[in-house]
Each structure stands twice: as structure tokens, then as C-alpha cells.
Length: 125
Image (cartoon, rainbow, N blue to C red; front, side, top):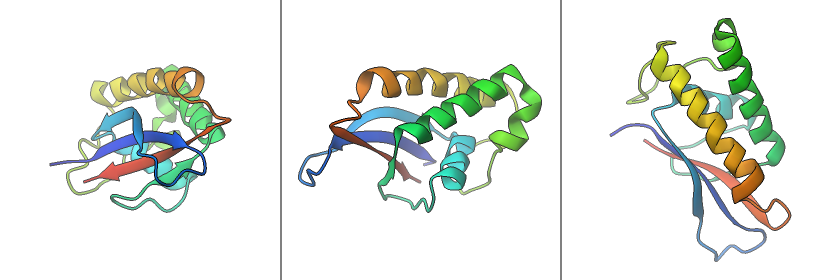
């Protein structure tokens, strides 16, 4: 049990289409906290639409924190929650940021056609 989070895509204006996974995190509570602060109300097991600008900002914040660890608590603070993982600013935390940058580069520039597809944040815990 724990915090699992996805970015999923599907064709615009097609409610019958199934979601397709384009990114996945496990117990990355700082990423969840970022979505809560920058996207809006996040609920367990609910799809929340995100846009290209949201994901670019998240990637930029990850890059900034990786370049200057002192910015971690300001830009990507950890957050408590039931089974949300570590709250430490340790190597695990920074590995998750590196993984996030890699995933978002693929989502932003390879995996999603922003003209025809919508992207959603989804979590289960």
C-alpha cells in the first residue's frame, strides 16, 4: 500500500476512450504536493486535467532544485500523508526529481500530441 501517481492521456472530447499511462511515480509525495499547490483540488482516485504549462513548470522546478538543493523546501516541499513515503530531503528525494525530469521530457515532447490529446493527473493511495 502507498501513494501511486500517474499521468494519463486520452483523446480530447472523447469520454469513452480509455486512459493511457504516460508517467508513473511511487511515494513521491513532493510531486503530489506540487500538483496540489499548482493545479488545484486533488482527490484520491480522481482524474484532474493538467496542461502543458503545468508540466513544464513542474519540470523547471525540479531542475532548479536539482541545481540548488537549498530550494527544495521552497519549490518542492515534502508532504505528510498515509503511506506517502519519506519526508527527508535525501538521495531518494533527489532521485525522484531526476526521474520526474526524464518522464516529463518524454511526456512534453514525445508521448503527447497536445493538439489532440488531454493529460490527467491521477493518484491512488
